[in-house]
Amino acid sequence: MATVYRKTDKGRNEIETRANRLLPRLRSALIVIDGQRSDEQLRGMVAGDFDATVEALLGGGYIEVVSVSDPRGQPRAAPTTAAPAAAPAAAMPPPPPAAPADPRQALADRKRQAVRFLTDRLGPAAEGAALRIESARSPLDLGGALEKAEALLRQMNGNATANAFRAQFIELPLG
Image (tube, rainbow, N blue to C red; front, side, top):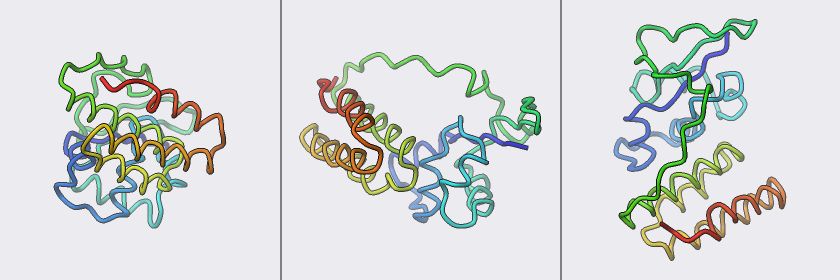
C-alpha cells in the first residue's frame, strides 16, 4: 500500500525556524515530504532507515498521513489518528498566493517557494542550498543564495531546470 504524508503546522514551522533542532537526517526527510509523493517515491530520496525516519517524524508530530492507496491505486481514507484533510492533497494544487503587501512576507514566501522547487527536483542534495536560502535576511542575501542554487540545479539537472528556476525566482522582482 502506498501512503502519502504531509507536513503538519509543527513540521512547516520546524522547516522555517529550526525551533526543535531536528537531526539532519530527520530535517532532510521533512524537507522532501510534500503531501504528494508516496512513501514508495520518498524511500529513494531519504537517506538511512526510511521507516524509522518516518516513525520519528510521525511520533514527533511533524508529519501526518494524508492518504493510503491499495495496490490497485484505489485511495482509502487516512487513518483516524491523522487530522482529516479538506480535500485530497494530490487532487488539485493550491492556487498561487496573492502577493503580500509586507516586504518581509514577500521575502519569506520567495524563500519558501525556492526551497520547495529545489527539494522537489534535488531531494536531499538540495539541503545546503536550501539552508543558504532559508538563512537569507535581505533581498541581496537571497539573490546570492538563489544564484548558487541555480548553479547547483544547472550542474545536477541541466539547463532547462536551472532556467526555469531563474525565471521563477531570480528574474522576477521581489514582492
